[in-house]
Image (cartoon, protein in one colour):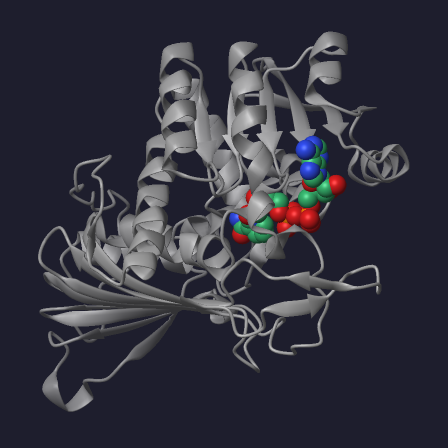
Length: 402
Ligand SMILES: NC(=O)c1ccc[n+]([C@@H]2O[C@H](COP(=O)([O-])OP(=O)(O)OC[C@H]3O[C@@H](n4cnc5c(N)ncnc54)[C@H](O)[C@@H]3O)[C@@H](O)[C@H]2O)c1
């Protein structure tokens, strides 16, 4: 008879975009992964009771509550999952940590490095399991990029080129809708919203840390119509941010995040050039990886496109469908959650940890400081550069070219 698994009671704070993505992951993870827990979707928390109840009914949450405080009083909770706007991350995390709960927080970990340091220190003291939802790490193609770099296939990393382009603020008459255009709630615009992902993907794939940065920000539309239709709003966050970085191994890097690039919806792309080869990963083609190596025979050299859904060869691919049957955005959250839970049982820190979230924020803050001062700014080191670990998985067949 199968061994009974302990029940894990989950509280989810927020029910909108990320609330839906995470609800789906809490629903699906057990169906695709052999997890060490039985998941109980105990309570979903939101301020609008009717909308919260709709979300509970749709995603199978047993209860609703209007605040974490209320939920902690009424229900058994083991893990608090946070999907509310940035300004509430640190406060809700501290509340959960004080109650001794495990915490899985959306990015960015806080509004600034001081907040990130505070929650990281508190989590260490509490001795609970924590992590940050940087889901893009868990696309199979991003996992393969990590492995190729770890195996030394592109050699020593020399240059990194990362862009995250959207276009929903291109139109200057678009209203100042939601919290993403309000500095007091989001901290920064395209920079924290999109640039935070680029920084995480870069740190994850290369193991490198940021030494110093030089950045600039731009707000193209400084006044927008109010969401209500009445009056105008002064915009206090960046539409676009670009920065240069010097990395811990001497590599150089460029980053660009914008919400004003017409035609681009969610163009989240990283290219890494090494001494022997290159990789390019584009989220909008998330199941594919572009790989070039000088080790290929000279007359067949060129970028190859690898379909990263071969279960025997690519991370996570074997959890889903037969080879080549692709997955989507939502699966990156399922994969992330599965790793969080497996690591929790093993008492192993999830990567990205709160330290990673804090290190990420140090880069974000340094770029803004640089943009303000128009000078290069050193990035405070939170973590040492890491040596990437090559996978122990056995390849199914040798490459026909290399
Ligand atoms: N990992 C990713 O790819 C990704 C993508 C989008 C957003 N995010 C992050 O997820 C977080 C949420 O973003 P979103 O797009 O889901 O936003 P959203 O506006 O769609 O949803 C936010 C939800 O939080 C609720 N809320 C706001 N303040 C609250 C509070 N104090 N207490 C309880 N509920 C509150 C709102 O009512 C809403 O339900 C942000 O921090 C964002 O940076 C991450």
